[in-house]
Image (tube, rainbow, N blue to C red; front, top):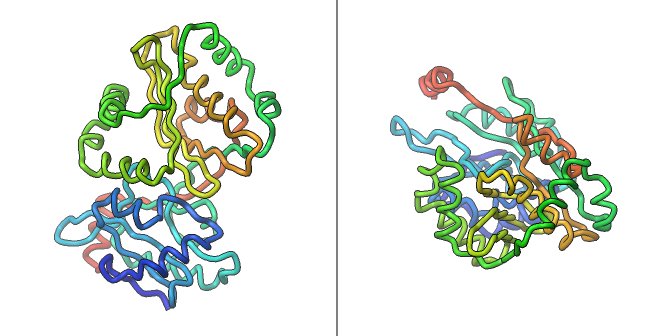
Amino acid sequence: MIKKVLHQDIDREKYRNCLQNAVNYRVYAEDWYLDAHTDSKWDCLVYNDYEAVMPLPYLRKFGLKIIYQPIYCQQLGVFHHPNFDKNKLQQFSKKFGQLPVYFYQLNEENADLNFADTKVKKNHLLPLNDSYEQLRKRYRKGRKSDINSMKRRSLRISSELQLPLLIQELSNKYPYFTSHYEQPWFSNLLNEIISRKQFTYYQLLDGVETVSSVFFAHNKKRMILLFSTRNEKPEHRGANSFLIDHFLQNHANQDLMLDFEGSTVPGIADFYESFGAKAHPYHRIENSKLQLFRKIIKV
């Protein structure tokens, strides 16, 4: 039986045990990640005694909890052990379909779930279990050229992270997301990741000027490129390529997966694929405001 469990009633030990043993583990579903990210605004669908779980982040609108998946939380969905019965999995579709959902993204392994009107999104993954030399052979010619052009410059790489400066760089690079970066949840989330030492950070410097930076969140065997920044100078066009190449040098020949988080924007997708990454589909459930209003009336 599937039941909805409110945030304050979630058995944290059982939830964590279910997630840690899940065949489709994602760091986004960790209770500490969701607590920091949503200010503890999430509930959960639970199958029996935590045999499977489905975290439900929400916003409060019209006096109701509206399921809404936040930025920097690419894939949620149902998390379960390897031998979880598919018929049981389908029960989540029916239960979830009764909830007021504005926006929610399933994990890649939830492709068998029957949801109406889902949109296919693309993630990009690159296994790192080959040598760096083998990984580099799969780069496209243009990617190698960009990296080599940066090597000829007098630049240095630093791993020293100053969070306020990084947030300012993000605001400068992505001004349309500034309202997110200024919210307490953003610094809370990054501080939580940093305090757990579940990150890799590189900054490319030209003297004291920041040229570009990359921030990877990781847990278990997946290294997620959570975000990157770069200044707009033409001579620094290959800066992010240079830092990602540096990351691959340091993490090659390991049983790890580089998760670029993907994109349906052709130029961005092409950038990830130029490193040899392959597209992996996952599904988004999205309702228009009118569809959501109709569903709320039925709740």
